[in-house]
Image (cartoon, rainbow, N blue to C red; front, side, top):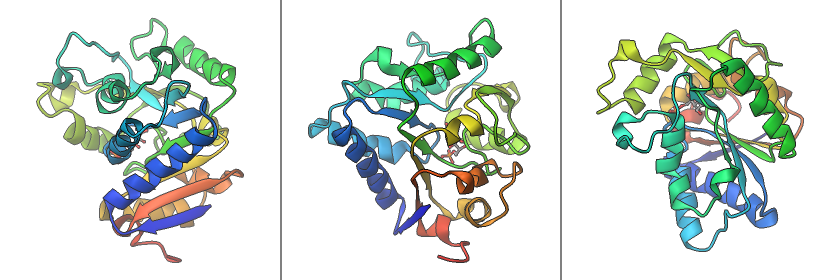
Length: 255
Ligand code: F6R
């Protein structure tokens, strides 16, 4: 595991974007695993700028980590009223680059059978040849994707209930102006499993800010446990890069 500590959030974002862009330049039809949340926003902005400067996404294939159950992109609604992760990705990244719509994959939170959707998602990842590089954040509960504490480390794409901490964090981040009350937030998701993530050929995990410091130290230096599903990074045998700012790295014993 290669842990890189940068001065601030902006430096982490650009370093992550450069890491992803280097893969796309080497492999124009790269299969990227992508994340939502506040942390990767800067990386997406930097990749959009790189696209304006010539980076080509026309053959890139993407798989997002997760989606809320009951949610699917609805472009007839204003962004503030459509809180699906699909809409987040469309607004913050996809509509600004030349990716083909058919190459974008996000679990459908409104599928008739969410169980079947999970199986289909796994099959689509396999059909694409697996994920070359998975971008990951880390949640306050130590989660990767929506793999909350207690999720088996060999889990596949599955339906996952969300913890109070995760709902609180996501309400603060995504539901401003939406008119949706905290108690009406979706409490379930479809998420790639930890086992699915560990099958990617490379991982790129990013975290910024002091509030992530304790969970970063638990994931990178603590026990490997499904109480902190991101600690599975220690089991990963391929190349794993962790990009942190000084705040997120501040509790690492070996920094
Ligand atoms: C999002 C995801 C989550 C986030 C995590 C951190 O697709 O899978 O695991 O990476 O909740 O979120 P932020 O970046 O908002 O702190």
